[in-house]
Amino acid sequence: MVTSMVLDGPSEYAVVDYDGLWKKLIYELFEEFILFFAVDLYEAIDFSKEPEFLQQELFQEIIQEKKGRQIADQIVKVFLNNGIEKWLLIHIEVQGDRDLDFSKRMFRYYYRIFDKYDRDIIAIALLADASNSFRPNMYQRATFGTTLTYEYNTYKFSDQKEDQLLRSDNPFAFAVLAGKYANEAKDDTNRRYQFKVKLMRFILQNKDFPYEERHLYISALIYFIDYLLQIPQELTEKLRKEVILTEEDKTMLYLDRNNLPPTWNEVEKMIREEGIEKGISQGIEQGLERKQREIAKKMLQEGYSIREIEKMTDLSEGEIRKL
Image (cartoon, rainbow, N blue to C red):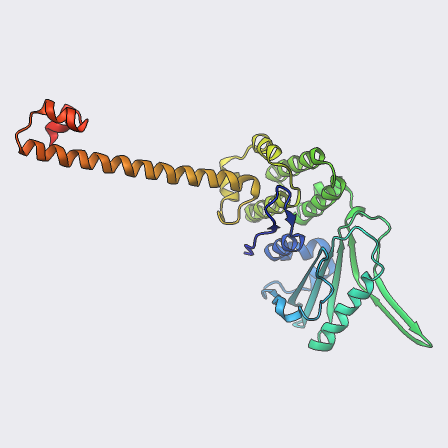
């Protein structure tokens, strides 16, 4: 499991590491990712062979335009049912403005990887921006009879219907819906809160998830949504009261106590701190009691009366008689 923190900065509205959120979710639920975004490819992949997430160092020198941009890239090596190895480039674009260089960048990723590693790649661009007019899907060049056309797969979040996403049993339908909500409520805290409560309740109560995968789906999605749809502290406290967790829900969310969603991470921290304080307090009390008993024993040996020992040690008559 990927356990890196996906927030950067100490402010109440910290900068969300969109890249980290999506990479974490794709890593944890890769098979479901392919099934949702590339059904034909899903049928061709041999999932009995573990997909390999290639290390960032493998292609960081190839993808150079990323700094300062909200994009997430992942390269995964898979094997098809016919035994052929393929590299899958997953590119998620979060930018809301029209980017005339987007298709050129997609083509650069392709030819640089092909040139350096001699691998064909299957490219999927997830367009999570709010712009309806931004729909790149190919790169073309033509000069005096020399023509180049590069086409790639795209998935536009804003095209997806809310009711259809809510009926899906694939966890990525809810990740897409969370992305849509994040765009729709970008500058509206109360609306973002309402979307967050709605999504969390729906996911926790969802009975369509496969029984064997339900715990993993819910814990991964709640973490993703909790970080993506940030709300102020007072609304977070309100959310904890509105989204009631059952014992089963708590078990699912607390499976990895070092990787808790922020809404409940604070509660867990308080429980830990209270437990530590309680333990210290109990330890001090137990130490005092031991010391009092030692003093009482010595006083008994010296011939002091029970009444005198009671006054000196605060032990009861019964406790002293036991000694």
